[in-house]
Every structure is written in C-alpha cells, then in structure tokens.
Image 1: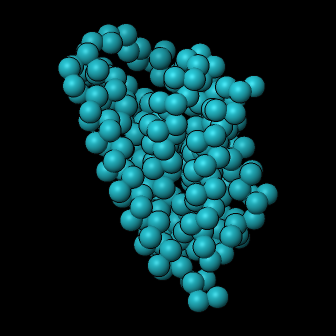
Image 2: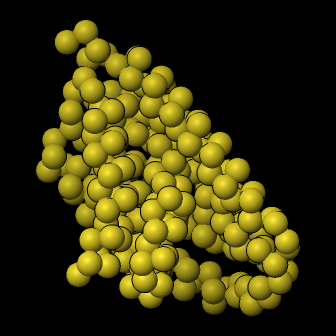
Image 3: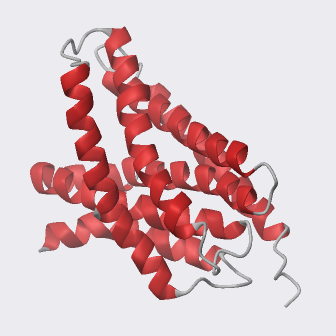
Amino acid sequence: MNLLVVAFAPVFVIILFIYYKDKYEKEPTRLLFYNFLLGAIVSIIITSILYYAFDIVLPLTNKTSILEQFIKAFFVVGLIEEFSKYIIIRYFAQPNKAFNEPFDGIVYAVMVSMGFAATENIFYVIEGGYTTALARAFTAVPAHATFGILMGYFMGKAKFSKNRIGLNLFGLLLAITFHGAYDFFLFINFVPGIWVGAFVSLFIGLFLSRRAIIKHQKNSKFKTL
C-alpha cells in the first residue's frame, strides 16, 4: 500500500499544481477526473495494443544499436504514448463546452498525461521499489507533465483558431519530439555520459512549459472576472 502512495504522490502534486495555475476559471472536477481516468486506462490500452502491433511489424532487438534505439525512442515510445494521449484530448476533452479558453488545453492534457503516468508509475514502482519511486518522482513523472503541457498549449490554441488541425498536430509533434529526446538519451546509456542529454531535454521542457503556462494565463479571457 505504501508503494502505491509513493507512486501516486508526484502525480497528485502535479495535478494540484496545474489546478492552482488555472486561476481564473476552474474546470469541472468531474470532467478532470474523467480525463485522468481515460489517461490511466484507455490511453494505456491503446499504447499496449500499438506496442504489440509495432513489435510484430518491426521488432527492435539490438539494444546497442543507436539507430534502433532512435527509432524506438521517437517512433515507438514517443509517438505511440503521446498519440494515445492526444486521441483522448482531441476527441473527449477538446469538444467539451467546458473547454472554453486556451489554458484548458494545458489542464486537460496534463490530466490525461498524469493518468497515463500514474498507471505507468505503479508498474515501475512495484517492480523497482522506493528507489525507483524516488527517481521517477523527479524525472519520468515531471517529464510526462511537460509533454502534456507543451501539447496542451497548442491544442488549447487550436480550439479557438481557424488552423485547428495544424495546431493540434504541432502540439502532438512537439510532445513526441521531447518525449523521444528524453528517452533516446536514456536508451543509449551504453554511451558514457550520454544520459545527461535526457536531463537537458527535461530542463528545456520545464522551461518551455513554464512559459506556456504564463502565456495562457496572461491571455485568459476570464482574467478580469
């Protein structure tokens, strides 16, 4: 039970942080919970199916091949996981009438991402214990949050733009790029010191996420209420 609490703790902290940052017009808690639940269950199911299909079509077995690890990071893990989140945001959250300002894109994308991260974290923490839980609390879980914020920033803009398709897809592409970069440097840890690149990409993602939050806050149509 304690392991489950530790696995959920960083997810809960990030959710509270984003909820607090939604200063001017809070989202319905029920809808937030639904997005979290869809991320935790449906997104994981979609990911598992696509992983299985990709492994049949193009199995990647050479763990010391930089090319194969590049493909795995960007076109398997990054693409599949972010696409599974994108589908929920695009077809469940974005059409909802409660999604009524650009900042909501960040809120719902983070909820879906944290649902995904929660389920993923449970498996890793049960297997790896408290050390894994502590490490992931400051790395993988915040990384999923940044992917969500970056994607949600553009999906928030997309709903109120004539270029909805382009902005939605750009948000997805940005999340895939940062997710892929983060994982790629970890996957090729047989290259001495290369793992530092994962933390560089995470810090850049955190920096851009902070700017995205501030910008949508500043432009909120509810700011004067």
